[in-house]
Length: 339
Image (cartoon, rainbow, N blue to C red; front, side):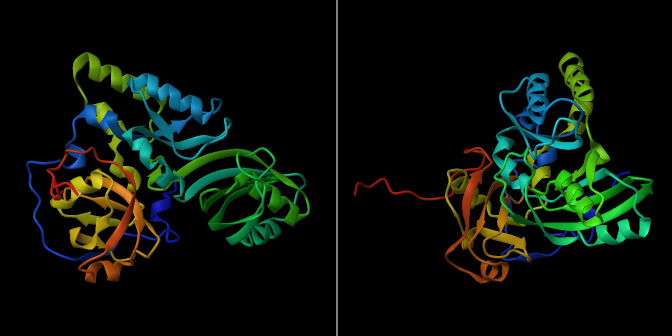
């Protein structure tokens, strides 16, 4: 069963409405639409929506992708335990800079929970309904974080099927939610005990099961490209890095502001062309060119209305630069005079 987390009403479309600040043209001589990039550039800064198999660790799978594509760097977003399968976005090359942004995105799983004793179906549905919204959760003993009590949000928990002691459900949750701990806690609430029998991730931010790629498919596509020059299959599997950032509020900037940000400068309000209307101060946002290329991600220093009205001041503090310097011409002035 495929359920797209992006389409669920519990996930806000952060870019549903855009505010126009100024009208500005973009120079076609610089940059390009992300989908038109050469395959070599996609391998340098792209993302693969990989279907992780059961058995290997997420780190091992990422290493195999590096070997298949003959690249130096790759990183996964959101570790899956060896037994868990499903959506594992693999960031390639410079795209590893945005792994953090994808780690914070909501996730969706299909889980088979096994109760330790039979329970009436009505009771199961009633108790599971109580585990939606904000819940307290302490990470399990085998986890990569400190075992301190923390709050996580369960956007929805939908029971798909109940058969004796087996309960199949779909859950959409905040990043950092432990599903095996969720099963354990539900078992305690039922008074029977329960554990996670099987788990598959079906959504991670903007990625779902609709275009998953296996390791074998990726290998075949790369070999076909190298041997015959046909890049059709590889292009369908390696997406521009922008695909991994669509869940973030966006800001579009002038061509003249791009290179300064590529050098690590913060975004000043006069450089903005348009922006998402739902930006709040402190939000992580993605800065784009007018051709749709991701330039950087950073922290909003103003809300959307303030950015639209501001004539001076810093709108976004740059955190990670994605685009390489020199892609756009220098549009900022430095003084060569000695001080």
